[in-house]
Image 1: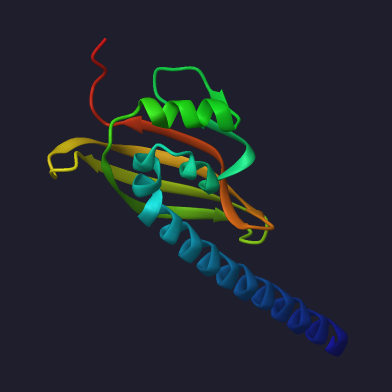
Image 2: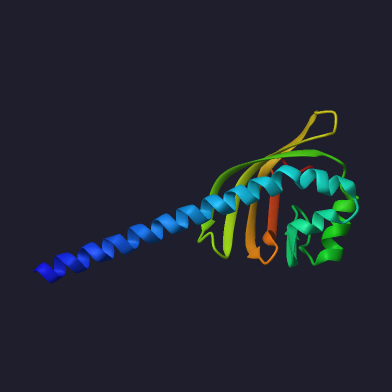
Length: 149
């Protein structure tokens, strides 16, 4: 009986320590993701390819009503064709271990440079931790507004 109590206590301690590590790792990932999200539109608006610093080398972008765009050339072309905007991201949830990958579920609000609201919607981003920090590996987004088709 004594052995069972000791083993149960150790098992609970192990789970508690693991939960603390994961929570700490998710906080670190969240901080990095929020910092990246804060400069995302500024990098995209430059039209100089600097937005690619936010993505892994083998990243894919999944825009609404279009084919997936994978690799630096396709992602850069997508942003070159896009209008200059401001975007505010609000993280709703982060999932994952916080060590190697995290999935971000967020809402976005997009305005033109004068502040007029253009769109709002949701995103799902799979982030990977690389030697250069947290990078977007898969980026999917869609508008909350009805399609104009």
